[in-house]
Length: 523
Image (tube, rainbow, N blue to C red; front, side):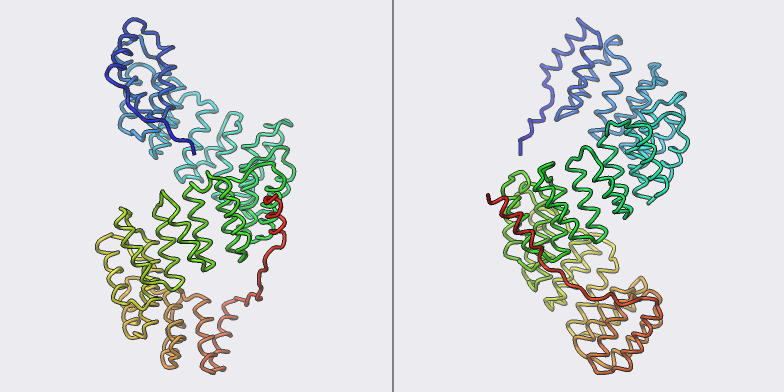
């Protein structure tokens, strides 16, 4: 991975030279060119230093000076400096300049101030396509997808490709099928004119994939004249999300063998998750070997995390630990995956040791980390430690317990045979217990074969509206394990009454074509 250039600030000597240049040649053309270069450099703060120098001479700056400076503020998340630039350009008489107004819409949207972005847009007398696209994009980015659709519906100018990309993102989030399809049709009729725009095509492809319209996605994908890595990754992800894992693998194979585009980090993260879903360790190992030949991939923390997660799910903790140790820039997800993996595979004490090491390395745990920790304590019979972590989560780290945390505590009590404590804990919960909590208790009773507790829990489930089908099924299985066939049948009747049919069993087998791919690369 190429190293970044040092991000040094302009020295006092350089600033003096710039100031001397401004005095002798105060024309904004050259200065704005330098300002733009500094804005998009490794340290945009230098652009603001130059901007401050340019303000000292009234003839050395113009409206472009403000637009570049606002972009620098956006990149640096300098909200107050941006507001100051906004106030200054209003006072200088540039407040109605369309370039500055568009820059302000983008600046406020980028930093999450949707109210100010709306106000600027509303006060723009003649918004151009950049204005419309900026406000629509800003609304989508900040979670106002429905409002973005309303703004798009009122647009009085021909949208461009970026407008369509933004609105398609909103359609994907809202599953707005009718509008998304209409945008697709509009794009075909009015925008491309036979010249494919891959950004729009990829957005339409993502829209169909996110909405589960996998046939439409496939048809578009196959008809695209030009496809890049985003196209292929979107198609693989679309198949994976809709449960067509074998098709996802097939598309990945064609991508590798065809050479139309090389996988990137997102492609590999997606296919590694597919490996877990289909239970194909051999494919995952091949992907790992492919990554070893591409050094950049092995430096990416997201790819490494996905690789660790795959080995953890297959129970290969040796390889998971190896990948973890080789990862130089670990993040919180890396630590949480390893802690959870240790817990899942029966290494409770090692999970706690990893947690201590994580704290030593300066990482603060989050909600997911504590689920992994509590699970480790549950499977390891470490009740006191589990209660200590649960208390620390609330009191020290100020993390509000969620249902999964409560379920871990109930499971921990239950596995240790502390049923009275488990039931007391459930009674004292600040929220009504739902499926995960009751399922944990059912599973504990099943482990210990307690018939009396089974009856009590059955009565509790009947009186709980939010109990999951999984909880009832566990209860049915527990009755069956105690040879109480009549009670098991009654619970199954309740499940059928809830309108849930049993899913036929199925199994996955390794895909033979994995060997074919491997042989190609070995050559």
